[in-house]
Amino acid sequence: MRSFFKNFNLFHTYLGYRVYVLVFAGVIITLLDGLGIAMFLPLLEIAGHTSDGVATGEEFGKLFFLVNLYAKLGLLLDIRVVLISMLIFFGLKGFFVFLEAWFSTVYRHYFVRNLRHTTIMGLANYKFIAFAQADAGRVQSTISAQVGAVANGFSHFTQVLRNMVMLVVYAGMALLVNPIFSLYVLVGVVLTYGVFLLIYRTTKKKSSALSTSQHAFHRLLIQQVAMFPYLKATGLMRFYAKKLLRKVDEIEDNQRSMGVLHAIGTGIKEPLVVAIIVVVILIQVNVMNESISVILLAMVLFYRAMGSAMGLQTAWNSFLQTHGAFESVKEFTKGLSLWKEDQGEFTFTHLEEGLRLNNISFGYLDREFVLKDINLSVKKHERIALVGHSGSGKTTLVNIVCGLLRPTQGKLEIDGVDATKLKIESFQRRIGYITQDPVVFNDTLYNNVTFWAPKNRENLIKFSKVMAQSALQEYVVNQSKREDTLLGNKGMNLSGGQKQRLSIARELYKAVDILIFDEATSALDSETEQIIQSQLEALKGKYTIITIAHRLSTIREVDRIVLLDQGEVAAEGTYADLMEKSDLFKKMVHLQAVK
Image (cartoon, rainbow, N blue to C red; front, side, top):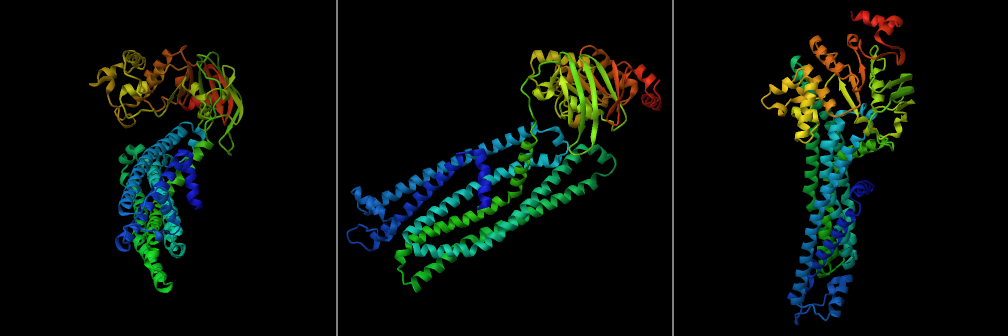
């Protein structure tokens, strides 16, 4: 019951009052069914024991109020009244069964939609520092496979809810008709519960193991797709595929085990129901000398109740097969809520003055500081370059400027305003970010550059303009489908230089204030690098440009170079200044044989 109410609260969180609508519908359906069944007793009495064709309803027990109700309405329990009553009760029951099924379908879609919206938007608002340390396979598995399993779990849970309501109402009616018979049957139910308890516990363990295996499978699958060229070129693809196959075997083994447990529970359900009722009837008739007619209605109602009890156990076991998915989704959504991005109150429109980093220090969670007491200003339309050995803090510093990370100490000011007071997404929309590994979506050239903007005349003109600025116009002209050319997975149909130019084109299309280049040309050949460098020179005076430089030859013409060493600013100035006053910079230049 504790587990039931814990999951009931989860559904209540997303559905609210709608959960109680399902409960109410279940109560009405069961009452109408019970009353319809009760009408069989006067029908049998009329058929075998009355001369005037009117039933007395003596076997109704404490349901005798029905007979009194008919009497107040001036009706006798003759065959016409009984049959019409049965028709009304079962007709109304059918109507409410339809309503319940309709509500269940609508609420299921409502629940799944809300759950998917919560996880997707929760991921959109997830702090970068938390995402950077998350398991990518678990994230993808939870949002896709696990949420799907929870959706199926909702269907099983509504069956649990329905059967629980039916069990209570049927058992309650049976107790009113014949308390002694009903109590004996209840004792039998309790004695058989141990069989199902063992099935529940085993199913729960298998479900948790299944979720763990699915997370691992998705993690390996993501990496197989991302590293396909390397695995294929080095002959390691089959070896890696075997790792995936082992996870597939684990998943299927757990699913098979749960299927067997479900089959056992389903198979023993009805025989147990009949066995309990048969034993109780034998005791009532042979030991307690009760008449079979006295226990007939209670027997039928309790048969219904026992059917509901066994249906409840089967549905609960099916629901427990999704236990691992539920726990995974609950833990994931809790983490998304815990690490939700903080938002300020002011909307950023455009850069007017520049950026200022005041006494910035940063450490990842409990680790040592990666950046230490950084003081740095970047004026509007200034071009600066961040240089330093690997691990000196260049990328971390840029991530703070982008709002991906928040300083552990100190503050970032944008046009003199503390960045924490801004709606960070409004500032980030004014940033263009070009990385060493270009972002290329498996879509058309147009959609990659415009980020799925409507294909109208105005946007096409803008698209052509940035194509020219990025030296991609010739590429577009040479394609048979022009801007509708598909670029393939991770831009496999493009060269390295074309990918970088595509990334630049996308950022120029966005109308940004700040362009950030994170070692964007380090993996390119010299000729392609020169083409892109000439493109960057053309942007001078139009954007604030921050470059993380690997090749020092590419930053001769920037306005200022900031040299980082072990998380601190070691020196800053022009290229000539640093060559004159910084031995570390001079050594780096000589190692690269820059002339």
